[in-house]
Length: 203
Length: 296
Image (tube, rainbow over the protein chains, first blue to last red):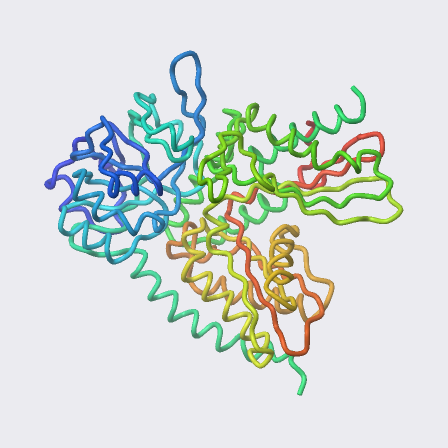
């Protein structure tokens, strides 16, 4: 099976046919931005020099190493996307970013942002940070270093970066929320059974 | 090398090991879960996880970029020669390991709200001490507490009428609502105590107990097994996607409680459960308890 590869700048056309559960890979430019970076971009109006129109954003705080005057990627993997729920919709609107990569699901507000801005959210397997680092060709820029290593805005060139599992698509489908509904139902059943076994209180 | 230098040098090397190689018990259980998994996407994620473990060793890099807040759980003999210096030495070891491994800078000073840039700060590294009378040894767990799996931790105090089934429900709900984002398969540490603090501390210690070990109290062990089975049946797989392999283990630690209070807490560990236990004798000779066949 051919790998489905997205290349930055990503267009509406590139993402609109993708559906939750599809697996894609990324070529081109990828930037990291997480809690404080989102807050800074949305609330302060400080604009990074890297243009994010059609861009790919990675919820990640890497370990980097300075070798001579260049930064080298040591280890990079996704962080919990839900922490960016508060600002992601506005972030997409302001920047024009098309692909948001992270870990775990995001909420209703981001779903709305994805539909309105024809953008998608995808997950990279968490904790697989050496696999991801091996897919980074080079770090081309570093902004907002005042926020510290995890929160800085690292700009990288990547090749076949993935697997990226689409978790929110442009139609507003939400993989993790769908799954959660199923889990909750089966949790109720399991807990009802389990309760019978755990009558340890005396009376 | 004198004793102080030997302890420091060994601890730095041990932190390096913990960042790059998972303990034997976790790897064994991950292999079993991988075999058991039948859902395609979850299986594919297991493939990535094992590829990542291999690459961490071959490229000599931390398994996960989030090398966490470094936490030491120390059981120190009252006659251990360096008992007065442990705190300082663990602080120094953390600074040095941060440069050498390298580790991510994970200490944000509260209220100042600034990353210190050294991976150390007020009460970071986090050190928990237990005194062991009449011993000249020191045993400690090193744990890298990542943000992802620290985030869903919860502690509460229930009315005793909630019962043990209430504790089970609390753990399950926390796992389904929040734990699924914390990189399953998860280590589920449950603490049963008498207040939020005691329950939380026991939950943490439970999460650091070996995978496959059981609480010595038969009913607690029974609950560990039953809860492990029930949580495993919910249908959560690797990374919180559908599957059969979302739980590494359920460990419970318990204590006596106030008649009116049932403290309950849950502390999660992600699949990349970077925990290791090392012991030192009075001459600072070390033994690795969770990484067989490894020399620092």
